[in-house]
Amino acid sequence: MAEALEKTDERESNLSEGLNLFAPMSTLDDWALGWFLTGAKMAGDQKKVDMANTERRRRVAGASDLEAGTSGKLPITAQGLQKVENERLVGSPKRVDPGATAGSAP
View (cartoon, rainbow, N blue to C red):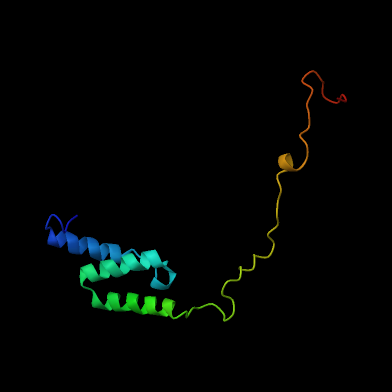
């Protein structure tokens, strides 16, 4: 918007602030990386443009920080996690007789 209103100082300030808010490049998804690259080009920051392009090339080449051979496999779940089922969904619901007193059989 600042660019459309020809507010050059505000534009540069907004671009700089926005680029500094991005997470580390290796953690960005492709969509966010694309916006980082767009912002870096708009800001004329060649160093950030080069870094973003390098990250894109790394991804296209298939390089990753994961161990070889893990592509397409589900991650191992954390130790100690257990499946918990909602009792209301598992068994039939218990009926309560509104006229019954505590301790009496239904």
